[in-house]
Image (cartoon, rainbow, N blue to C red):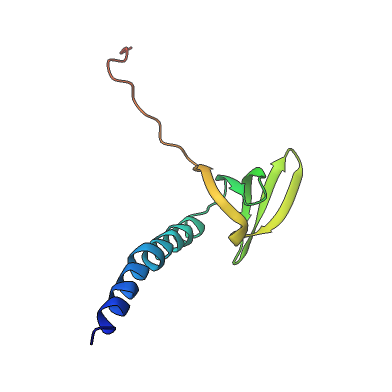
Length: 97
């Protein structure tokens, strides 16, 4: 019984400091990959910036320069920089015409 308490404590600490944060990061990455649409600006894990031109099942076509298109796996997307249709904000106190 004396050895059971430290083992249980170790398992609880392991869960809250390693397993749970990793699951949250994986869920965020899965949500990011599911939200990719044509026109999004992204950064790949290799450091390429580009605009999505076509989305397929497990890959996408990325335009990294004018006329330069590459096909990459969705899992190679590190982050999204901008959405396809950014919302326009109205400035408070704007002039009326």
